[in-house]
Length: 166
Image (cartoon, rainbow, N blue to C red; front, side, top):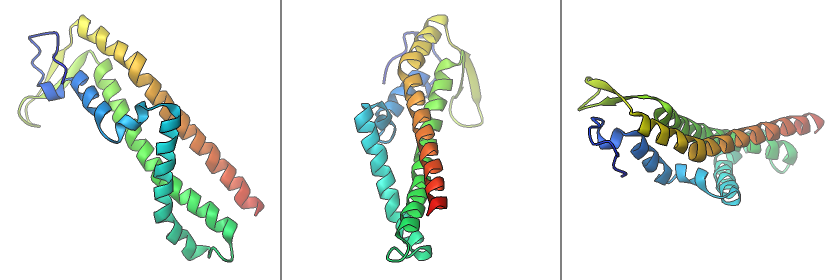
């Protein structure tokens, strides 16, 4: 954990936005967003492929692969994309939460439980540091996730067009 440069910060260490960011960045699912484009796409493709294992039997019940291969492939791909979409939504929500905590000049925290919430106003020095982290580290990740959502939408559209042509 990174120590705050302000010694009078009342926010518990694990609830300080910078420490939350460091923890999220190192967690197994969220760190995949920080990889190079090629590695990131490989991880996304792996999630999609694993989702195929669940979507395949469901699609096979409606479209037997030996009779309707095109419909089976398209419906399995769409079903697998739902699993991928859920993972992408989770990633997006996590990174957006950390972005909002870092950008906010006022931090809400709990001293010992949900019933005793407090707020603390960040000094300008910390606010500036946190906003730089958002600009240079978190915004590119959020843009990458938005591009992934857009790519997935294009693939859904292409699948819909192919479905109507088959």
